Structure formats: C-alpha cells, structure tokens
Image 1 (spheres, rainbow, N blue to C red):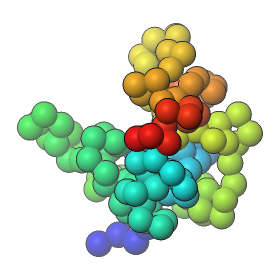
Image 2 (image 1 turned 60 degrees about the vertical axis):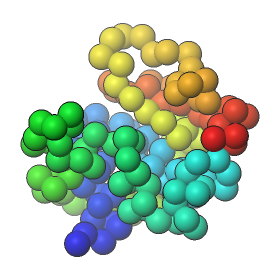
Image 3 (image 1 turned 135 degrees about the horizontal axis):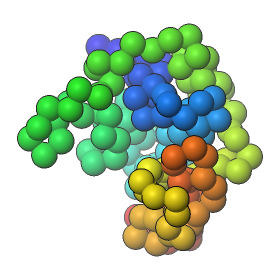
Image 4 (image 1 turned 90 degrees about the vertical axis):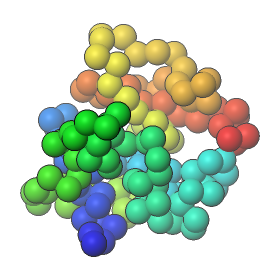
Length: 146
C-alpha cells in the first residue's frame, strides 16, 4: 500500500507528467485544495485531510483506476514510476503552496480543444486559467451546496 505522498506523486505524474512544472504544480494544487476543502462534497470525502480519500473518490481521476468502462488502461497510478520532480511537487503542494492563477481551483480537465468552457462541472466552477492542455476551475457559491 502506498503512503499518501507516494500516491500524490504518482497521480501528478499520471495526470500531468507531460505538462511541465507549472502544469504538474497546478494539478497538485487542485488535489490539495480538495483535501483541505472546508465545505461541500470534498470536505466530506477528505474527512479531515485524507489525500487517499480524495484520490480514490469514484469518478474523479481517470489515473486512479486500472479500468475504464471495463477496459484495462495502462496509464494508471499503479504503473507510474515517479521521479524526484514528482515527489518535489507533491511535497510543495502538501506544504500548502499554490500557483496564483489556480490557487483556489478544485477541478481541471483536458478539453482536447483550444477552448476551455466557462463553467465546469454543473456550473459549480468557473474558469480560472489554462495551463498546458488543462483548464482549471474555481468553485462558485453553488459548490458549497454539493
């Protein structure tokens, strides 16, 4: 069983390994924002700060699952081999650091297009920034009702 630092480093590598330092830091920040959420869905899931609970919340991170729709996907956290940069970014995020433009973001996704949606998901987040291939979203007041 991996400890939480190892899980975070593996998820960073899997979700954003090709996005450079800024992309990996932005993704790590959103994960830790969920861990530290004081209201809404993620505050209940993290149960006071569990990185593990956030990473393995069903339907959240493709890389946390070996299978998608019954098909094995080799790009998952179990097949990652984090390097020092992934551990350094995990440590950076665990210490409470955030990038300014996505400092409050709870969500990210790759739209596979040059445009990011204005809101995501279900209007509980508003567009904050795009870093590399990922769009990042800050919570709206509606998020606290989730």
